[in-house]
Image (tube, rainbow, N blue to C red):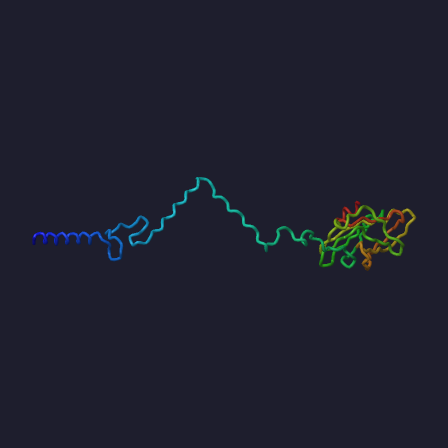
Length: 227
């Protein structure tokens, strides 16, 4: 009887040992022993960040694609000339006798031809419009116009110190005219601007009532005398 009791005690002890070896731990989880770290964890237990795959190199000789141009901002000024720059001479007014000096030089005695010259004495540019307005001493009337003058937009532009020329023809001595010792000049301004006439000495200038004439303003003396 004592042998049977002893065997029962031993069997109970073995059963208790087996239950303690595979039973739950104190926190309620099965104790499976030391586990290996997962594939995504470091040795310290912190998940590692996978490295970005390297960029594939571009094909040899192929330039990188250009970046798209950025759109202009709303505050950027529009390109192109400004309104005031479209016509650089928009503020150049016709020359008057207040802007120029005047002289007359005999060119051909037999035809009483004189070279008229004006020079811009002002500090700004002006335009020599049309023909000179020439009167002969105390004779009535003015020189007739010879040749066609350009319009105001194409008229000769004179900067400060620049000159313009015109050719005055008194006419051949045909016995119908008179001789005068001076002429007076005013400028065509296409306006009612009052001007002070400029005078020049012209000794022996014969003025034919039917043959006198004056050319438009040009930029050189040769053309003025050949028109």
